[in-house]
Image (tube, rainbow, N blue to C red; front, side, top):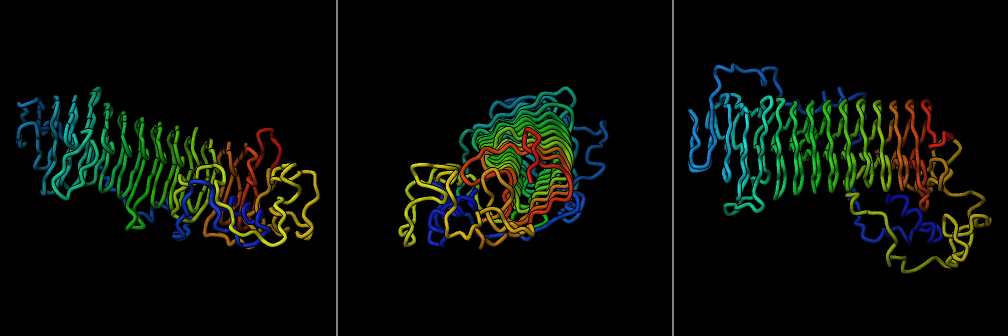
Length: 494
């Protein structure tokens, strides 16, 4: 948590500004770019301000008598109204296509300029491709991929893609340039051997189905939005698990989970949204190399179960708003972090100071941390029983002001506080209105570079005493008018 680390460095430099450039070994400077702080009253309000999804009531309804059978077979694929060239099967008009069979090295393509929905009814499909995507949706109004009851289906892309000059797409085993909905009760196994598993360059909705995704990079990605309504998602990704990437439209770029079950292991973030990450239901079991749930603008959890068993920072956004549900977080750094910048927390792994120390220390600084000497190290590098430095006017850092403005930095195991006295609060907030929240953190339990409020909920903070970090670290105002905040033994934390 960069803010606290810099505070320690400033203290070591005699409370002057000369050490402000200190960073943990291996870190990078966070971007100063910030987003407008948005505090919706509810997820419904957040979604009302966001781009509407492409879902329609009749998307998942069709006349079975009008289905067009398509059989996939190496060198012998066939279907009415489809184009077959070798092992590439192309659908060129809207309709309801019931597809079955195997292509050991082939591709299913959707490419139509005609108005209407293309429904791909998978009923035992297996497609592997050695040079590109297994399923490529080039053009259509929108596409529904239906997983038929009892069916087992698989899509596997190339380990190395072959592109025409200047091309960089497709880059996923299932790649769509249009709005895509996945639904049904069957099974779909997707293996992205080169990059992503499932990608839509527009919106992506998972309505239902039993879906397993293994990806060399990101698992499931919708550019405009990614919405999970139901079904079961089992994800193993080297990159992010669930992701939305549209950073050119502030009404897009969101991830919403309103139901279903998501079990994800990710090398980076389990959720990564450039605007909002919203959870209004469902069961999430997440193990993440970086953040558990990350959003640049707003992160809201209203209901459901969120279990983050591994993360660097558990919940991270400019605004973190918790209103309900059961939330369990294990984080090596902060459990909840409200920070309004676009820096990459993965670059700030916990670690030592390396060799970067101020080139010039303040005159009169004797090398001792406040409270003792290096020979008698305490929580701040000094003797925990020694008297405080005389140049601090009897005030210990981190206690904040009596009126609740908390302009110090959070002491070890103590109450909330912010950065050093002159640190400016960001447009960032932690707002807890309800829910059962348990956090086990190597850094701060709750950290806000802005303000924080608690009006309800049951909060348990299990925080390792590491350096200056403690259960609660707030730069701006900290207000508690309801709920409970305790340690694992039930002792109140103020």
